[in-house]
Structures are given as C-alpha cells and as structure tokens.
Image 1 (cartoon, rainbow, N blue to C red):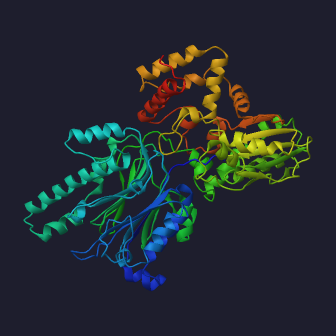
Image 2 (tube, rainbow, N blue to C red; image 1 turned 135 degrees about the vertical axis):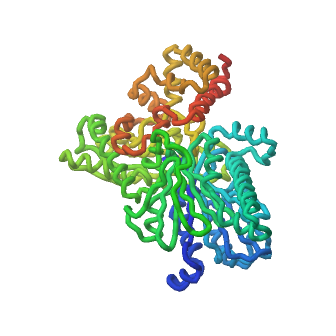
Image 3 (cartoon, rainbow, N blue to C red; image 1 turned 180 degrees about the vertical axis):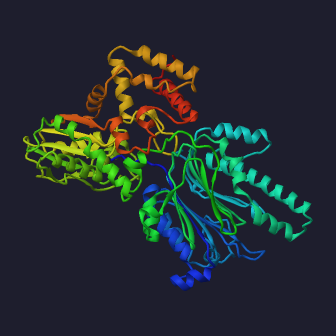
Length: 596
C-alpha cells in the first residue's frame, strides 16, 4: 500500500532490416519509435519521476547528427518526449544541435528507453537517464541507461581519480559512464593500432574501427569493478548495442530476437504484448551475461562475469513487476493461498462471520489466491471491496498536520460492507514496509465499520532490512519491523545488545550483517504484536492481528528468486552488508543520539 520507489525500467530495440522494409510491411517510418513508446508505456509502473530515450542513426552523413537523446521529468515524461519528436527540432533535454531535424530519429536503427525512479534522493533533469558521453570519433560516443544501484561507488570513484581522471559528478550513473567510456576509448585505440599495422589510412581506419568494436572487451574490463544489482544498457555511436546483467541476477532483463528485431526489456509481458508473442518466445538474460548486437546486426550472448549464487529479487515477484506475467501471476496467487491456515487460526475458523478483502491494487492477485485456498477447504467465502484508493497526496501541502490529515483520506471504505460488531475483517496487502499508511489512514477508516476483529495480512514476510540494489528502502528506522524490535529491546532492558551491535558494525563492517542480531531474541509473533501497538491510531476500538508470509512460504511460492535480503538480512554482496552495518551506526548516532 505504501508506494515504493524502485527498480527503474529499460527498453531496447535494434532494427535488423532496412527502414524501407518496416515502412512497406507496417505502413510507417516510425516503427522503431512506436515500439519503443509502447514498451515504455507498458513499464510505466517502474518509473514515474522521469524518462529518457536515445537512438543512433547509422546512415547519417558526416557533418550531421547521428546520436540523439531526449529526456523529461514527471509522470507524463513519456508522452512529453514522444509528442516532441513530431516537431521539427529536438526539445529541451537533447544534446543534439537545434538545427538537427526530428527526422533523424526516424532514420535510426537503434533505440533505447529508460523510466526512472530515484533511489538516491537526487532529482532533476541532470539525473534522468540516458547519460551521454560525446566524442568526434563515432565509436567513442557512448550512451548508457540502467536499472541499478551500485554499492561501492566511492571505491570506483577513487579508482578513476587514481588514474588521473576527474569525474564531474559523484554518482553511480556518471561514474559508470566514465569508467566504461574510458575502457571504450582503449578499445578504439587498440583497433586504431591494428588498422595502422595493416596499412590502413584515413577514413579506412575509421571504418575498420566502427566495424570491429568488441563490446565484450569493454564490458569485461568495466563491470567487475562494480558491486551492486544492475541491468546496464548502452549504445555506441558506431552502432553497437548491449545490455549486461549483474552476476547475482538481482535485477531482471528479458529479450527476444527474430529476423526483424532484437528487443530487450525489464519485464517479459511487455515484449509479449508489444510484439504479439508467447511466453515461451521470450528468453531471460542470465546472471553475468550480456546481450550484444554489433553494428552489422549480428547478435550474441557473452558471459562477462562468472555467475554467482542465485539472488534474483523476490520483491519483483511480490510487488514490482506487472502481474500479467504468467509465472508472477501464479506465484502471487500461491503467496496468498499459503496464508489461509494462519488466517483461519486468527479468525478462529469463523469464516461465516468474516469478510475478506484487499488493499488495491497490487494485492489483488494474492487475494484471489487466498480466497481460492479457503474454497479448497470447502469454506463459503464472503468477499467485499472494502477499501478504495481515492486520491493522491499533493506535495503543495507543506504543513505536517495538514499533510497527515490529507494522507488519512487517501483511501476510502465501502460503508455497510460489514455487519458491525459481528463480522471479522480479513484484508490482505502485498507488503507492510513503514506502516505509515496503516497508522494514518487504513486502520482509522476500517475502524469506522466497527469490525469484530481486523486481521491484516501481508503476502510478503516482515521487511526487516534496507535495500541497496535499486529500491527506495535505505533507512533502518523507516522500517516498522526494525522499530518494533528496538522498542522491545528498550522495554526489556536489553540496551547492551544495541551497544554490542553498534561496536561490531563499526569494527567489522564486512564480516557479516551484524544487524541480524537485533532480531535474534524475538519471535515473529512478538514483533507482530509490537508493530500493532505502534501502528494502532489513538482511539481505535477494533482489535488487530498481523499475519505475515513466512520465509519458507516465500521460497516455496517463488523458488527461482532467492533474493530475500529485505526479510533475512542475507545480502548477496559485500557492499550490501557494509551499507546495512553503516546504516545501523548512523541510526544509533543520529536517531538514538548515542556514541557507544
């Protein structure tokens, strides 16, 4: 229910036929642009703070622009960008000269798009992907976008500066662009030397370089420097297209190829819908693997780094990705169905006097699974749409009291949907992260229906740890499960545990995730009860019980996505472990105002 800013989305298209082919077959010279627009709109769920697109026109003559980029901010960024392309010149955000015709986009064969959610707190057009590195040599021009968060950007920054470089911005996207651009320069210089050894001169050297760039060389000398979760996508001015996935498979990517196109996107059903394909037609880019399409149109898969243990993000399955994916739909249903024994226990098997509902909209599929599970046990289930998502909180409200009052009305209820004081209410959501919406809105309005008992169900386990691989959950104190554990520690006089954990995090930030020790003394049930106490609004009458998915249930429903660090604290990389330990140190020093 609490919208998480997360992930980002990518889309890439390489046209493999002459442009006249698409105009004759599909009746438009904008076939590539139109498909890019559809792929981005179908992934709008992955980013609403900004969007950007780029293309390469390999047929542009010398002296004319051949690499274009457009970016815009806001939830309508996609529409703004593509509407602007019908004008006679590029709009704001482009790096092309104003005299360049918009037709340069239609003459392109390579297209790349990005949808952005900020996970760093940095906003503005400057931070919207793609990022562009210019050069007079076509092959040295590089455009990057990605779905990623790097956990060791300080170390990479130091590596670059130790070589004499001076990056203009200290951010993971810019640093990645500079490091990969540096390696691309070296690749071009290698080819230049080869061409000279073969006796080539002038433009023949340029053609030799453009035809022989080996992006696998560039990626193999770039990506091992990074710790994090990513799908990194790029175009070069000479016509190379590539995408590379992190070796743990944290971030997702899917691709398809036929004799007309090579396409890649963050989600499988996006490609299916846009190109009218079956599930089996789409392939998933494997951990550490890169899809590379050369200037000639020849494509290949290259293993850039050895694959590590599977840590594909389970939150993709629970919440982030579109539920229209065949496998995700079934997994979400199973997540809901697996909770029925715990739900029946919470309502003391009184299904007859219980109404079942869900928080719109991402918990709907888990709700279907939950009700299917009850019916399989021969229960007649009473279903009502109890909660409605009504309005969005407007940021022009600045006073905190006013904002809280408005937040309380983001959701509304269906009056008369329960028999007051007789019916239990079971309501399922996909996750409970901060608990703010429960406290400020959901519990308050549900209490107006006077349920006998509210059973709040989460189809995911307790979220106990921050994410550092592309999701906006970077502060421990924001997580209601963490606040509950600390509250129990203080109540039971166990402050020494805070001190010991603090010292361990300071002394051994890479040894292991010491924050896991904070939860060790308590059962899930104890933390559940404390969360309820913390989130109950003043004056609320109905009793509340929380039911969470178990870790075992999560892996049973999503067996191929073992990335569960949000719930278990088992981060796949050293960078994640270090940042979690550092987050606890910051919490103690700033929030508790203690120096232990």
